[in-house]
Length: 631
Image 1 (spheres, one colour):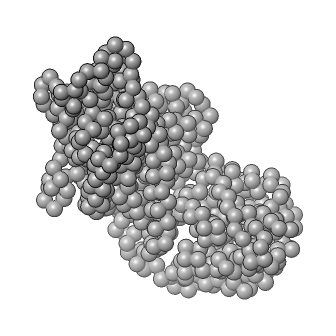
Image 2 (cartoon, one colour; image 1 turned 90 degrees about the vertical axis):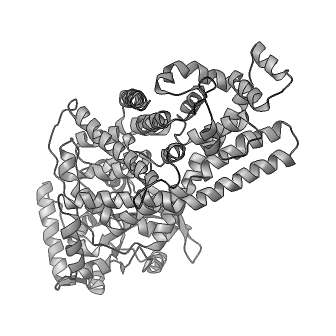
Image 3 (spheres, rainbow, N blue to C red; image 1 turned 180 degrees about the vertical axis):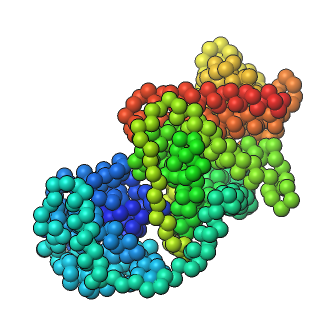
């Protein structure tokens, strides 16, 4: 046999994804928060004898009796798949008795198994010692002690797989009781007998964790501490990213200038200077901020603090029809709404799950970050501060808080239209505080940043190229006349050509609908292209202003800042317009991929359409109000 089929199973937050990453090198997202894996992941790794191991990472589940959609995925897979050669069950040593319930159900289903006992160090801080050798003898199957976060025991797992020792399986129960409650009682009785043989307890060492929790889990002080932490995060996003962003802007400005002087004037040169370079610049200039934001989010998750936020926010969230389990999707929405909506599968209560899915897109995702950044730069000076704090950082935090508060208020309103069938209870196991694993931080930041460049970057480049074509071509007498006119004012002439192009016609078509918000036809073009991805806004503006004045090699920020209204002579991006545009992007859906995921998760076409309508109306009205007040 040249190929082995292996499945990873276990309770939530037991370290499955960490072991999966260590075995396969695929570097899937891992965190110190329950419910990270919500879909089946697959990977491949070789054994020393040349055989391939095809490994499947299942969502975390507590038993064969699922209480949420992600648990149902795991239960259905294990119940229906008969082609797998082996199940590797990962158990948390500090919660071994609870973990072995699901283990025993899989074992009694006739599966060949390896038991990987993870988090031995965490268990020791809780005063729990596990005799791995005796546990292996009692079960009669391979048992390996591992630390999946740092890779300890991974090679032992590979060796056990290669030795093909999984020829017998342990059977907890000789018969299966007909009643579900009786079965659970019988299993825990058998597991307790086993625990008495293999584990012993001594005074716990969790003094530090208990002391910290006494502060950060305080009902009121805890929330203030959380706000302070997020405040420092957003300050750091601007402070730490400024120099690399300036460097990237300078490099692309130099590249545009070189290309304009070194390349011959033809179609390909126009595409490079007017489409590709602005598109790339619109992606890469914001990469430092994206990477820093992901770094801090991962840091909070890996340390165990994010789980505390979930627990802390349960009681205020319930006032809005949500629960503590809604916090993880909402906080994940600060990175991307798509995986955030998928993570709502871990919410058992149907009403809370639906509310979470519907309001999560109101959270300011990383795709909005480039929009906020460039607009903030137009109205807030680089060195502007309030005491020791950067005003741009304060503005950014304000936009994220606005998204969070709006999502809660929207959930409160929508909850009146959804019938509550049953009330939910919220139980979460708080992990001990752990020193974040640098390798995990690096891999998550690298992969998220790579995903931004390759995912959003592809869309931005494609849109930039298409937009360049639409902005460089047109039809009709006016277009022909402009292109055959002797040029006296290059900048003005290019502006007229752009306005008469296909792109200009599109912008002018929607201008009446957005003019009350302070937006002109150029912004209208960006609003249309942003439906592919919100961050396309920056690439679109870079392309438009690059074509309008082809000899201007300044950054897109400087070009937008110098743009003036041809009638009034005032700056286009006044304080009123900039804030109006930020508010519009804060609330508008403008993400086709998110709508597709909402449709997939709800199974209803009506809900994403209602979501799109509601968010667009909210964005327009809020933007109009801000523009009127600030004008």
